[in-house]
Length: 275
Image (tube, rainbow, N blue to C red; front, side):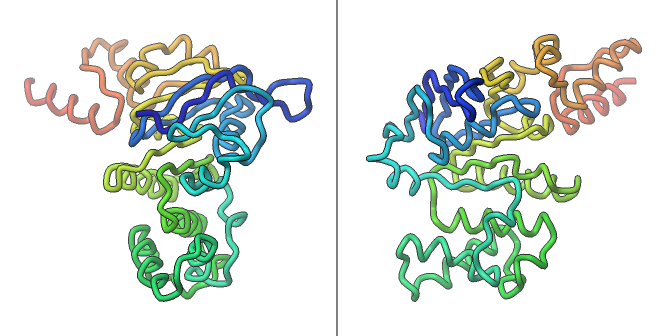
């Protein structure tokens, strides 16, 4: 079943150049899909269109079979949560607890039920001990985890991550990427992650590569990474593990392809044990 279907989607900020130009793709329910592309490729624009934050110029967007239009907008927004690049833009409450509660209040959750929900999702993102802290005093990674907890507490079917790790240091990025993977695996959520991080793409089920507002490549990570020349044309590179394997082959060492560093290390250990 398709969680998201986008057909011939077009959008322009200035009515002259299309930021999204005849974009067509679909996202399977329960999948972890990444949309990747260089700056200005249109990936974040597509995310905002799917979330109903921008109004399309033409085309069709279906969420769980419902067309995204004015009539269905309220229902669709109940099904979709979005985590933005800068978590400061999402904070409303004076404490972490208040911030998570804000979305619940908007969903008319009864006060007596709120504390249990807040505690549950704060624990899932490992932020329980910060519930009474001011969000502005948290680190970037902690802020992003709070933003994720606030979205999760509203029980969306689909979560869109719009460059959610781009402002974090490497350690913070890894923690958020691992958390996204956990959400997908443990809760079966449909994840649509807009990213410029090629290493995150490795962990996804399906990849949509964009260039100049259009879909350039689609497929599993393995299928997309099997086209290095096409990736180069749209200014994207292979994951480090694949680039290292190519260098090893040039040095005369034959290794079985692996798109993750973990897979490459296992392969090198296997080869070493045969020596």
